[in-house]
Length: 192
Length: 190
Image 1: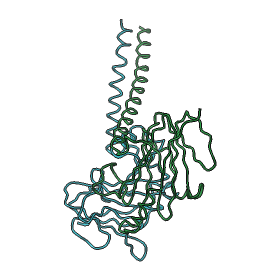
Image 2: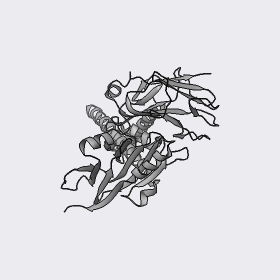
Image 3: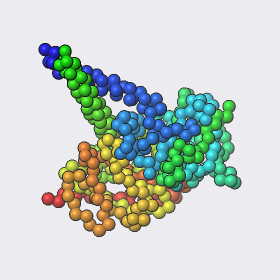
Image 4: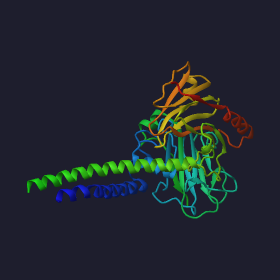
């Protein structure tokens, strides 16, 4: 009798455990502190977006949120939801992103909300290695605000709430891949 | 007493193994489901093995979240269940270009960019995509790629990045480059 109860209950208990494990994993993955590499305010997936080494939970998360990311040798996708002081990035502040070119063939920095570009009357969502205006020493500053500014300005449009900054590094150089946690990335500074 | 104790230990071990199997099965099927759902949103879903060319990504783009700014993307939903697919492309100069193959579990299982392509194969490349069980006799300069298990249907993306999106001449040039890709469905060798 006991044996029959054990045999019958095993799949039910196993299914419950699997579901609990799924909930724990998805919570860890969506909170952004699981299998993540941090570098200042930036974070990226430890194993790359489209890599064979990516965890199953990350594949599911990528499939749900974005999909079809390239592997690490081809592109590293950095994201920032918080500024360099650890405060959530919101539309009602002015920000400055300053730095030099990351160790990569080409980079592009864009503003996203819920995965898409933030609409604005200038249709400007990003700056890249090839179109950013630079200082004489090669460094650059990108400004984010709702009010118009001179120089490299990305308009935040007429929005409320928070947004995300994405830094894409195409064909990262070996120093970025080998020293991903210490590679030189731009600073994200709140100005007001 | 000892027998019951052994039975309970065996039950715990078997239940844990079973729960791991359930987890792997469900999370994998969920990923396939999400990928298939996204592929169904592509305009070319009903006409596989043909490339469709997208415009420059903008705030109105809703096909794939987190789109690449400055990019013009061409997509092809492939189906190599019973056929193979030949892809012929011209690698452009002066821009970033890459062709990537995605499995239904989100693996990017093949990537070739402009630098590698020119170094290894020249400006004209020819890729044969087949299912992993099919045999194919490779011809000179052909790159043969086998789709992974459960991914006889998947996605091919070609990304072309404009160095200066405000340059209308460059945009025209890149739009022409985008169309320099051809596909041909091949019968499998018996």
